[in-house]
Length: 524
Image (cartoon, rainbow, N blue to C red; front, side, top):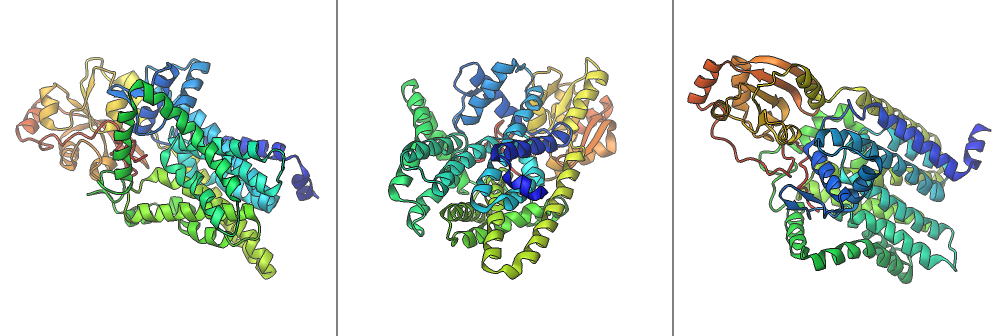
């Protein structure tokens, strides 16, 4: 009787409950469970500039690598709530609540979408997995573009699928135009999501007559409107040439030429090695990424047009993931939309299989239950863990770092986080530390050891032998975050010996290259 009451409840009420639960899960570790990334501070600063009614910009000028969809939302929130924008790190932690809310709304929309085409039980399963899946939480808990972009794409697909399930002859043009605008705003947040928003609709025209040509045409017209408005603003302001140049570089990097960030970049950690290393924490995520195109193919043969559209979306996103992993710039953030497509397709695939072969009902129910339980364990473990070395250090430094201290920082995140404090500088070798009178140096072991920092591993080894630890914190993302103190005589000797080597070519402030996932220059 309880299940029957849930199934008969208002969809909006159910979706609101789903969103509330998802937000509650995300709130558990939002501040202490997810280490600060340089990308987050860049995106927060871009949102702050949009809030000042400027073209989204950084210190070196207007920013065109990514379109402004998310930055406009950030800017509106900053202005409405009156958030302080002078400290990029503090602003990130404020804006994480925005991405957590957007992520929770995405869970609710996915619930409504699956409920429309497959019923309440698979919708509840999909929403539950999305609420706790560790890889999804990892994205929704940081100020990244993909969370907001996917929210709008899912919203557009929901309206389109609702049309396929309940066509209304007198309103179909307005509905499909609105669906396209929603999906198009997602593309205006992250260009590469055109694959998620548009390609399934194009395929739906030729695949088993899932969509009529005129339906697809109206949707595609709507999807082009947000970006068209954006380009129409760039044209008279003279920025269109800058936009073209940024997109050319972005698409080249996305396709894998050149390989600067991501797992296929030179000297990057092995993708297979990284998967093995983190399987205990993200096993469910890897399963979903692997099965995405397979379950998509199964669902694409459904008799239900809405289900076929979900299957086509999973196929194209799964194939995009395979291409990026094999040849392109495969970076962590690209996995998020693939995860969404996969979870929705798995939920529908289970119903399809049981509908064709009823003998599979019990095995499918057991398997889905075990998978959900595993996701719950992994997700809650992630949310309840501590991975906030930068925040811990910032709190310690505010109380205990001497006012006259000079501190060398060794990666892009710390350089940006503490860049406004005159005590800090990007001094990542003993000669540079000595030249600037810096006896303190802040290191993150994992980025340095993996070659994603300004400092080289030999500096870290030298510090371990000759410097005194003032602060230490350990987390999943950065390994050991340590503040070292070097006495003057030792620093002079290290400078004379050239410890740390010649200063490595500093990473561009927008690459976020100290992380294995890459960062801001991750393609369109």
